[in-house]
Image (cartoon, rainbow, N blue to C red):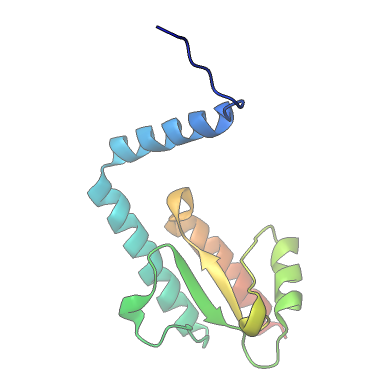
Length: 132
């Protein structure tokens, strides 16, 4: 039997990361993971609405359980919000193309599907929105 080798060096860090993620998934249980993502999505939507911000998707049923797109509020520039969030230690996602500067994204996926983390990030966003 002929030995076969990879013709490239595998990313062992990526393999170990995937392995660790799968172990966490198995320990938590898929149903619990899915519920945690839905809870994070719902919390995010409710907090954003309480700030007077508008979700990009018209029907909340279609909002992803892993990321929420939000319209940049009138009177604000995304680059300014982004800069101030980063100063507070938070990074939300901007957008590109036709919706650049019109929307931003809040990720709540994987270990970031965590109500404590979301609360801190949304508190920072709310503080920025209220102080301008």
